[in-house]
Length: 282
Image (tube, rainbow, N blue to C red; front, side, top):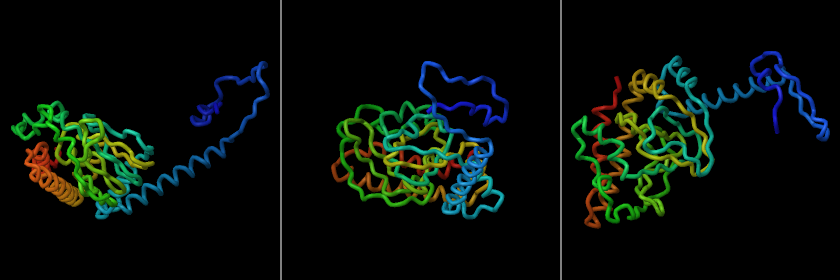
């Protein structure tokens, strides 16, 4: 499975070493790839990748109002990744450096409410809203995280706002983590955090199936979508608020029926308000 000469081939330079079969081994069987074949294969791969990016963009309705120049810039900013069942794509608390668009597959977002204080304490104190952090994250919860919320299987997403509704909060077995939502085709990872200017990722994203994503670095996303694509940003905020309100409504119904406190519900209420107040970065 080893490769010989790949550096010289890729960089189009002369070989820097001799290759000799060891006399103590049996005869070696090699597959030779010429420079012409390599170049043709590379060009075909790049052509397929460009087509995949174009196909995704054409089906992603939130950028349908982009002019041709902006659309092309959006396409060129996409970088493909593939993850498999059980892969952790991003972790709660990670600095947000990229936004992910899901091309295919299912991703579960897990939230650990107990981490919210350490993540967002300084951020929320600076905005004089520290009190809205859930009590569950300030002290150990009394059985709250082990309440099960029954929700139907989410359907394909529609873009921003962790779109696959409903947003459930089911317990993750043997853990303080709960399921925040399931995101699939045309969904995004990192949208809530960017729209509310949170400094780190609120959830851990785990691939449930083989998942294909496009990644875009945060400065490009802010430039193309939030600043230049103003109508897209407006629709993004609307979808995000709809998703959050739906999730919080279901959560309140469950908690009120059991006479329990609202826990992280107040924090989500803050996110809904912050989408309008804080969503436009400088």
